[in-house]
Amino acid sequence: MQKEIVLELSPEDASHEIHYKRLIVKKLGITADRISKIQIIRKSIDARRRRIRMNMAFRVFIDREPSVDAGWQPAYQNVEKNREVLVIGSGPAGLFAALRLIELGIRPVIIERGKPVEDRKKDIILLEHENILTPDSNYCFGEGGAGTFSDGKLYTRAKKKGDHYRILEILCFHGADESILYEAHPHIGSDRLPAVVAGIRKTILVAGGIILFNTKVSDFIVKNNNITGIVTSGNEKLSADATILATGHSARDIYHLLSDKGIRVENKPFAMGVRVEHPQQLIDRIQYHGQKSAFLPAATYNVAQQVSGRGVYSFCMCPGGQIVPANTAAGEIVVNGMSDAMRDSPYANSGLVVQILPSDYKEYDEYGGLAALRFQANYERDAFEASGHPQVAPAQRMTDFMRNRSSSTLPENSYLPGVVSSPMHRWMPDFIVKALQAGFREIDKRMRGFITEDAIMTGVESRTSSPVRIPRNPDTGEHIRIKGLFPCGEGSGYAGGIVSSALDGEQAADKCKLFLDLIPVRLH
Image (cartoon, rainbow, N blue to C red; front, side, top):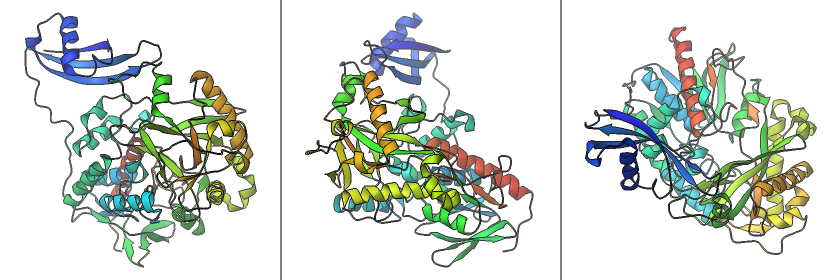
């Protein structure tokens, strides 16, 4: 027999089975020896009131052992001799598109501009400690995509896009901790996600897929509005009957290539701002009403505020984390955040960003579908000019920013390449400055102590999502004008985060299979 029950527990009682088993026994009115296994189904924190509670749902097996449950099992087949599809990019969209293609009996050929995740780690160390940027191997580019080294957050609101639980199961199959299956806001951690990505790579290769690292796309081969292949930076031509375009939001060369070839791209909504860092103890005190205990995780926050018709909101909040350099070229400064699995850094950081409206980049209208991209790039160049040093981020105390004054000193922070005091209120666009100041005041009303001289703002947080959308037919999944080209994921403007990108990649693979079923195998 098995029963499902829901309990509201103290953080200590929720911390270990030895504690919650006692309460389950009491709730069910049975003896402990009758319970063979307790499985956690859901777990969340309710910190809205001073008495912090943990909401947990359990599946309890009574008087019998549970049937053997190996979890999600793959249906990967050997596709070494099968029809091929090109997959451009090995972020979540590209990797999950490749896995799904294998399930469908199609051989994926992944073209990845960056390096395998193990070598990518080495380049990130050079970036953080020696300020040496490798343009195609950094926090944005390389195997696994940008999300690999930014906490591995798995929460998504895109529940209508597909079976998000399936994505979590696939990640668990490849080495992620099973807690992601029941945590309300699951994450893997930047220290553990690379191993999961390497596991996915192994699955693809064992099944006969191909991954070409250090390979950039320099051209698309298009004939009669049909894509028939690509040309690499090494001038090698790769042909296939279909191409899944799964590049990330920082692949600006791809956007320019598409535009130059007359393949339509469009401006899309996005946001820019700064990354704010507080002492984690302060965020714990605010969010847990001064009751932080060893049984509670590092506190998070999620805020959104309308200011004069614009959204101001938090993005990629990283409790117990650090700020990292996320630029992909010289002459620009971009920051992001990450956390390891334990989230045990003394700092809490989050992007605080402002909604960008079409009227904000009207002066760039001559660039058509790349106008928003141009505006974004100029914002990042302004940050570099304010810093004057590669990777060194312009920064300001939050209290000084609120008073429109320069910071004579800066608080300790987690950004390893270093920060330099900069009057950000002077050089950032005026509408961003005013929206952030008004937004901070509103946030401080709900989170008393949020505005503090211990908080540091670093610039700039500009790559929250792609400012470009590659339009596709909602029925076929193909580009609206180019047959056989399937844009997907965050870089194409259809996802935001690991899970939604993975789902979109899978759906692109499904659409691609339907397309291939309708056409004969071409002789390239």
